Image (cartoon, rainbow, N blue to C red; front, side):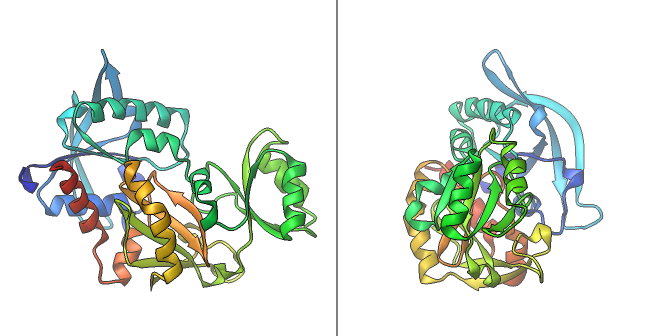
Length: 319
């Protein structure tokens, strides 16, 4: 199959609302455009299942690297999803029930021959916070619980702890607390909704001051350069969305060891494009829905991540 004949459907958030200067999905689409691929755009509500067949209300889209005028959309067309060679699922978290239902529809397209990245079943199974817990030997001490007493006991055990909502992204609603924090009870009441909702607690890793490294793995193989997201002054969160500064850094021996521990599992589960987070010596998250920071890394390092991602897709088509 000629690369120029590839048809690509991209399921994403509203394209008019993205930040084009840093949007990874747009970076992938720009690369596909340069290759002559035919790109179609969908939002999650455009997917539907009719008599067991997956369909979409698609729009042909062209893109360009222009911060004021980055896309052009054409007329809506209803067509079977399995007419596309590749379907790229890039809807941002949270993973709602509607997101889950969409993966069921995409699974029908996959069964009919389309390559869906990432694999729909694995998008359902691998929660971005929880999935890392399958590799406890790579992680700092971690607890997932809805019980406020249990969470408080974890703080007393480890003194300083970071709490995260399981469905969050971009550093939203992340709290750092220690055993003397007068707000500990209200933080836990808020995150757990008074003991009815799970939250994650991780021992605070002081090496965050050197950056929260975003490492990309493509079919289980790591890109050799990471983006260390360094917290701004007065912050403990390195996320770029809350003001962190990105700095390209080579992977350490420990980073490579972590990637080696998880790479084959990711590949075998059809998680082709993954961004993991590493602080100090520890894995903290495995991001699979719509990993970001590709444009920031490519701007700093002489490496083309989107080339590697699209090349991997082409290789899968010929397997």
